[in-house]
Image (spheres, rainbow, N blue to C red):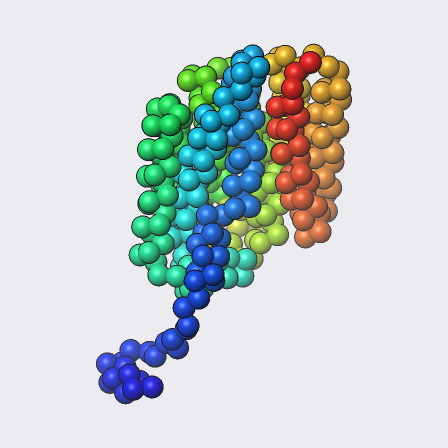
Length: 310
């Protein structure tokens, strides 16, 4: 190439030019938004919205619901994009994340930064204009606490999981605020369900990829083996134990059928069993099973909460 002598003289490494592909670039920008996480955000936001209607379901506000989900998804997508921008150098050191678009060098960091900012700002303004200010403020608080509290703490202390679970549990609050314009005790019960769910979910991920996290300098688990084992045990079993009775509380919302309690207990009991197996074995397969159970449990529980009352 004609530019190679110039680059050599300037002591700049020559980087092979790659042919631009619009579909590949679009796929990379789509991946930045973390669509697999957004699915759970949609489910939990909708559950909060539906339950927050407080008996208005006979005249269901479909337009407001769609505006709520769209605005929340935009902010969540912006948060995921900005998180990958902040952590791009560390993602490149982990096998699990090294193929992400920014970590792999397929996208320009400044373009990704502005893409994340644009999504976040548009989503926040859209929620304020099309839904209400409270829903927008909750979304903004979630974004800021996730990016500027949880994200830097991941490199400092294993208690980052506790901090990260707070903004991570916000989607049902946003949905509830969008439906009713306020937050009630029932909204905080949904928040508590999602808050507790995150601990066993993340413990499974942290164990499966502990070498990766250590290599990148993340302190999501204690470094000492004995402390790490106790930390995993408590962070897995204690939240799972609390989820079982807490999952019955949505009956307060008007679910009068006993089938709700039976199904909720079966879901929570099964989730607890996978958590117990993980704590006993601490194997990759047990962690993978717990992770799968968590991904199945959450949408099923929130769909159960949001089914028509009778």
